[in-house]
Length: 386
Image (cartoon, rainbow, N blue to C red; front, top):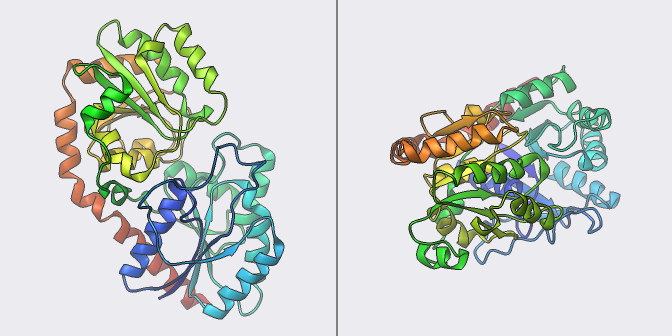
């Protein structure tokens, strides 16, 4: 099939850029002619809450692409439309995650629907934003999603949100694929060195919170839980990820609960080369999300064969199996989270959960080929209807 993909890739950072890059890589490996158009920039500096949207990795994920689209420059929208029409794909795949993209994607999809129309599928990483979801967000999202011929979602909650916002559009659910290829880089440090840098004694157990620190991820509940856990266990929490907001807020939170000496903040976006050692140094990954659709961090953790303790929100239950490869607790419940962490160590659940993750490695490896097949089938079906 002739396929075209629009989305972020290197030099941009983050889970969606990694996802799009891996998707194009697997589409091409499967023999599909795949055109890839990326951004010359994503966000204006005044709008982006992080320090930088650039990937600092020495060996980042990369694939060949054309850098065409600037969402703030309508002239580039026309340029992208002309490139797509010239390449004549059987299916164009757009990425959707926040309403910021509404103007550019609305115009692009509308122009491409003029005769001869281009079939369009939108991959919804989040149908609605984690920190939003109000009436304006819903209207903007609906404006874009209704212009697609098909939507691809990665969780049941997003399926139902998409159905409510775009009732006449075909929706296909595909599980979020593995991020394991990112973990194949040679580690830049040993576990012992990393623990020393973190100031963690050798015998102390390590909880890892990984990823951008944003309000919906519930870090404050983990800080509260840590105070209770430390009455029973010698544990240390490592928070690895850029804090979007005030770092002092979480530091004061830790001081309030008298656990500041037992928390290490790595307030930065870490390079791919650091990931294997960071996950290897942890005993368990703890993600106390208040809301979620799916989580690339869970896929990273599982790729590193690290069990996950997380919350009963969004589509996390579809991946984290309680008592099999992790533990599930109610959201915004620090006491339940503390009990789960204590149980994990007192019952020595780590070896069993890790063995289950190792057994499921072959199934995770097939997640990309399954997604590629879903896309190829969708392209054939839509081509047959035009």
